[in-house]
Length: 96
Image (cartoon, rainbow, N blue to C red; front, side, top):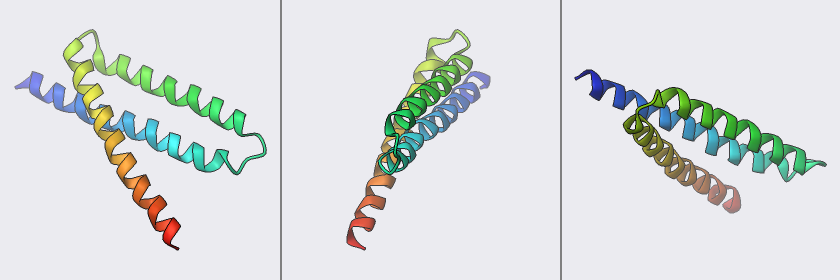
């Protein structure tokens, strides 16, 4: 029972990490294309988002590959959700 709870928490942690990573990417692209120095935005964002994701995976994993796998699954689920939400946002902006 306890192990199942730990895996559910790892899944939610993966969703949170994925939302931060891919939501941050979307935010960076929107800001970066309007900036006078887009390279700084993209490089800084890449380093920060990667640091957050890798650190999060490390703490969630705690040496157990199953936790890492479930966390990665949550990360990928967040990617799907962010892509769907942002693509519908782009479609709505294009229609306006």
